[in-house]
Structures are given as C-alpha cells and as structure tokens.
Length: 118
Image (cartoon, rainbow, N blue to C red):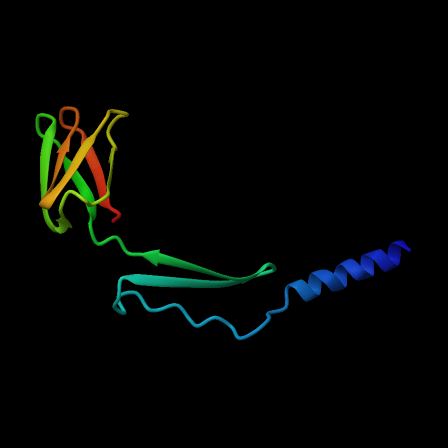
C-alpha cells in the first residue's frame, strides 16, 4: 500500500511540472521601447503573467529649510496621485502636485523620494 501511494505521488509531481500549452514569449530586450514590460512564467498552478509599468515620473529631492519644488512636465495637476517618503528619518512629508511641478515640505534638509503613480 505504501509503495502504491509513493508511486502515485511521484507520478502526480511529475505531471504537475509538465508544461501545458505553448511556452511564453521571450521577454523584450531592455530599451526595446514602450512603457510596459511583461513577465511570463509557468508554475504548477498554471501560467502567471506580471506586468511591470515603468515609472516615468519618480525621483529624489533634498529639502532646503524644509521645502523643495520639483519642476517636471509629468505632473499634470492636482488630480495626480503622488507617493512621497522621507529616506533620511521617519519624519512626516507633504507632497502637493501642481501643473508642471511638485511642492514638497518636510523637515530640515531631509532627502525625499517621490513617485507619481497616477
């Protein structure tokens, strides 16, 4: 009985690792154009597809007396969603997008990371 269970387990594991369907296409070469990179993989649970969106509007700025203004055309107005974090210390940060710029306020000369996500 034990031998039968072990044999069935080996057959099940071997069958789960078999590729079903066509293999995924090769990933695009870096710099091939476009703002989206698709990553494909096969797992025992089926195909997996991850889409990585390139952040065209992200960076870092250093505050001067607690304030900074980042001028970049990727900020289109106050409806933008921007994430900001203080990478120097656990201090609060305020980021306010405007048309063509991002106003940042925080503590002293801290370094602030920002990313427009929408």
